Length: 135
Image (cartoon, rainbow, N blue to C red; front, side, top):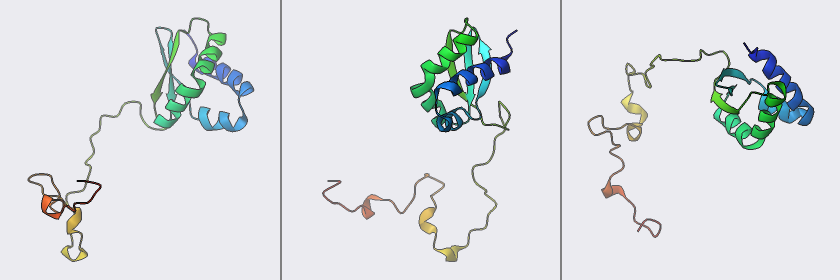
């Protein structure tokens, strides 16, 4: 059985020697090996932005560092996983509170939509301003 923490720490040591401290802290902080499946290393990253950056800028370098420690590594994939939250969350949460009392004196009528057709009554063809940009 492969020790995932040791594999990733060895790879990070190699990466740290070859990138600036600022880049290392920015892009490799809060990363870890999520799992190894069929010699594919799945790396856990904190956000989609970090995932995209690692994939576009450091992917070959990460693969090389992992292969230097474990030669059987065939590829690297990335999964978004925020630190401190469970790996899989199936809890459904309401998007908006429905028990709020709306004060009609606030003048926020234009922000609400008609629940029957799911449209904002403020935006109709009658209120459309025709200009050169939308003719």
